[in-house]
Image (cartoon, rainbow, N blue to C red; front, side, top):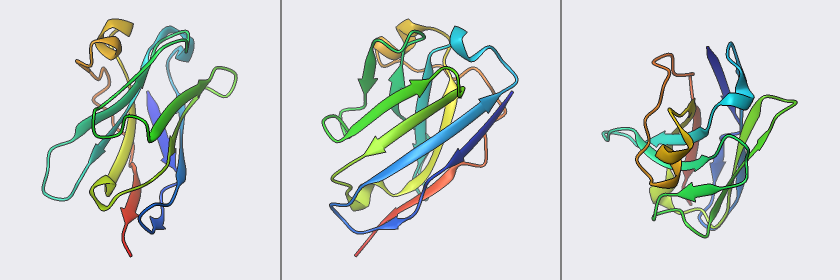
Length: 126
């Protein structure tokens, strides 16, 4: 299992970014997917998830209305569009596969793979 995240950058407050995560080593269409982030000195936290079929999404309260997760089956990729960025969005962003759609829908994530990618750094600062 492999995840390759990209798209992070330094951006001013209020700005936007689009993150990508290209996956390999598992049947992408069989799994719900999530984005997580880890801020300096803090534990990794769940940000957003999307169900197996891509029909439903869910978000952490801190990003609702600002972030949007999507997935592309042929590309075996998951994306995170981030708008109205705030300094507290700063961190390293990762994707992972989820145990089930329910984990996403009830916001109780359970990342399946211990093989996390390198992540992509997002820094929101003026």
